[in-house]
Length: 209
Image (cartoon, rainbow, N blue to C red; front, side, top):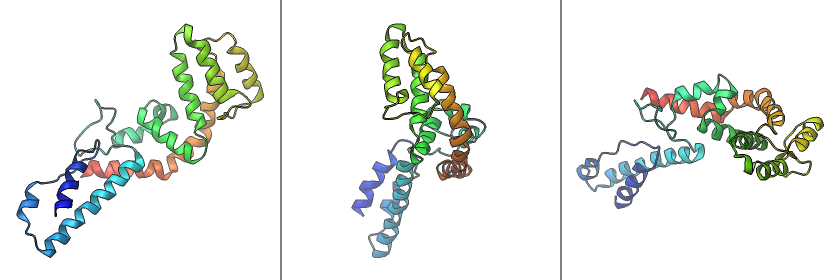
């Protein structure tokens, strides 16, 4: 009984997880063996919820709540919108994370990492463009890059020339190639994957509760 009483408050405080624990329950139950067995069943359910939370890295939505103000709370409606276009998926921070997890499962996470690096690069101040351009090129574009992206020879050579006198658009050509690759190849599979469908089902079930 003491172990269950200690573990429940910690789970109640986990960000993004919602439980309806009633403090009166522990006081009203007797200390019989039958009641002990009933109490031991709850932590198993909580444990499953925690595992699901850690597995998806996405907080569940409490019934009746919206996601308009918090980036940490995701709704079923948000996830449905991801299926409308890759653009809408990548416009959502959590969408980027979930899609990145899917790409990692396919050993192609370098695509979204490069795309995000390009988005960040465009916002870089002029005096920092040179260093950042070299870092991105060495990490993703160079023929010996550890996370080399799948682009054609012409685009690779063109990008190499552009970063010698870098501008905010130096990686636009390569970024477009990778975006199209994700859009036509990985994105359709993502929408059919367990990662996406399980997340959508979980959120829809929580909304109906």
